[in-house]
Image 1 (cartoon, rainbow, N blue to C red):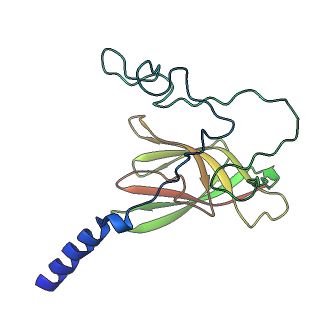
Image 2 (cartoon, rainbow, N blue to C red; image 1 turned 30 degrees about the horizontal axis):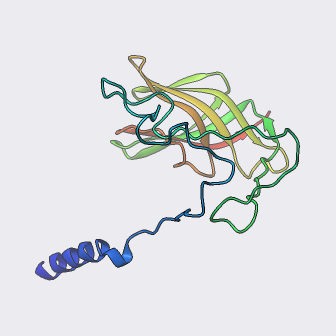
Length: 190
């Protein structure tokens, strides 16, 4: 027990070491290209400073603005800290599905249940109501993934979840509930 505690204290002390502190880029050569600070900088007459009542400002703490550039000029900007232009990732073309298979888990019972639904239907599972608003899948490989827009309410009508769930990444946008878990398995068209 003492050796475990000593190892934990040594680990905390090691993490607090200045030699291992996270380093941040220093842009001492000037401002980041393409961005401007608000007039007056961030101190003094900063429009983003908290108001008289101490409330946070509208639009965030440090509002950076990008100056307008020519539309369609084809210019590529290399951002500081990168060695090449940032490539965009193309989104796969998707097809609309009319059916979805979900898996629901009641953690108190420890029993998962597969639920097959038609898009637009609502099913009651325990003390929650699950409604599928839309379901899509990649058109070139239907078995590869599924994207479902779900709305989940508790029985009194409080919204617990409203958003897209992705079958290949169930934890990316998950239902936060102490008892129930719901995730998408597949979308398909009949």
